[in-house]
Length: 251
Image 1 (cartoon, rainbow, N blue to C red):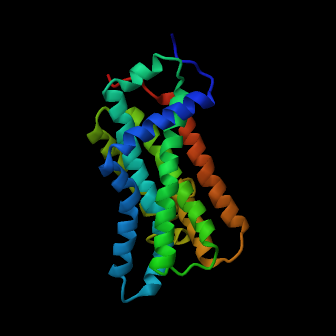
Image 2 (image 1 turned 60 degrees about the vertical axis):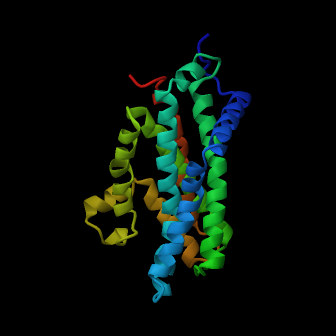
Image 3 (image 1 turned 90 degrees about the vertical axis):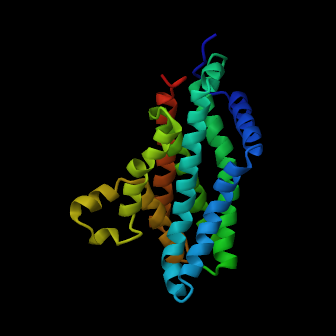
């Protein structure tokens, strides 16, 4: 029987439940996804212990970047492992469409992203004293969207890797350029016009901008709504592309 193309809520939730059961038996992966961003924020706070203003300046941005990076790594490797082991081929031989599979993975890792983002946001705001003008709930919203974007990017690039090592190699190509051009190291409007134009189409730029809007404004702004819409839209677009390019197995 061939895999069906229509998205089914029951098949999607069944896939998500299977992925979560696997994660439950992999404590190292759970630690990487949930604890590493918190540890990095904690270290960053005390690296700048003599300059709280520096942490306030970049802490909010990194609160979105760290979850994105960890979710990208874990999701790309986990999906590739499913394909190289033949699991995907067996699943797609059943009445399970590619859309169901990608949506199930996104749902499972999205649940983990909620926990990850909540812990990192709570740590930054209430324990590390990140000075935020806006609501911490808005900060959590952006952090969660960033983690979901990392999940979507990881699912997408896993289709083009033949091994776990190759999946990790996609990080310099996919993540590092965004990290350099997102405005973390230098304001985007001070960059060379060509670099600024490139940064304008990279989703991480809007993730950082959204965090900065919460950092400096007490109320919802048009710029903030634009930023989170772009990040959410990019995540949805990449998930759609991931479903279209998903391979049953690695050649």
